[in-house]
Amino acid sequence: MPRTYHHDPRSKTYLHHSEETIDKALTDISNGMSYRAASKKYQIHYSVLYRHHKNPHLKKQGGQTCLNDAEERLIVQHIISCAEWGYPMDHLDLRIIIKNYLDSRGKIISKFKNNLPGRDFVTPEAINTYFDHLEKELEGVPTCNIVNFDETNLSDDPGKKKIIAKRGCRYPERIMNSSKSSTSVMFAAFADGNVLPPYIVYKAQNIYESWTIGGVKGARYNKSLSGWFDHITFGDWVKKIAIPALKDLPGKKFLIGDNLSSHFLEETVTLCQQRLAPSMVFCTMLFLLEVDDADDAETADPDT
Image 1 (cartoon, rainbow, N blue to C red):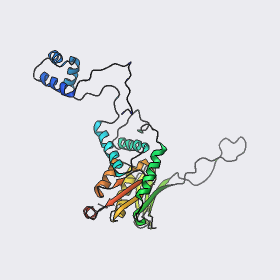
Image 2 (cartoon, one colour):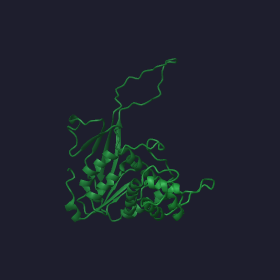
Image 3 (cartoon, rainbow, N blue to C red):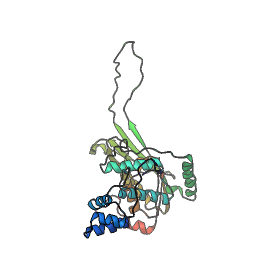
Image 4 (cartoon, rainbow, N blue to C red):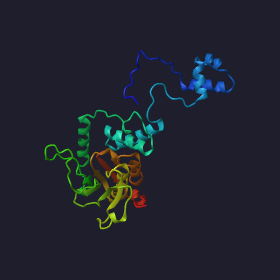
């Protein structure tokens, strides 16, 4: 949708008729009235009535939105939920959420580069407001209810490096062991020192049992084509590790992490809404979870 629409005075001006008037005219046409008679009665051009009668689902005039009304309402609903929880998403988060949404449904928008919408300006005031709010929210919260998570990527890709070689050497060789493999690990710990099990993501299409033997107790394993966390692996981490660790704690729980937009997808927000209390706050760099005892009793087994 356009941010601020300004009508071009040089462009064609269309007459705008109310939907109620058009519906009445279409009803008369369906009952046997001619297009020209209905046009004269309701002061609507007969070609407009013809198009509406033959195709009830007409597109809007001018440029079309990349998402339909239902998709826009779905995304807006989750943005509003995050804002109501106290931490509105920034523009980069919104762009990545839309990209993940389109990718998950196999839709390709040609005007978006790799399905990623164009960027917009984010003011420092918005960031400062976030931290001001975070400081107030952390007041009175015990350290055992604060969790910080971060992911790191391990790679043995040697990359490119400048070397010293004989003058005139066209193809210098550098012999070393490398496989260009990539593995990501999610670490999370409570502020009181307790550590959550790690979550390992391999760069592969399949997970082999030998990769999980001898690992840390309680660790989870997954895979992605890039070896990095994406919205699928992060959603699984929230479901299998974060929610089980936080759901039994009384009061507010803070899950603080880096500002990676791949962490946010509408399925992840919905998962937290279903598994945790309705008063939960889910935001870009912070997840504020508040679970009542009654909600804990109704929470399903996280491994199911």
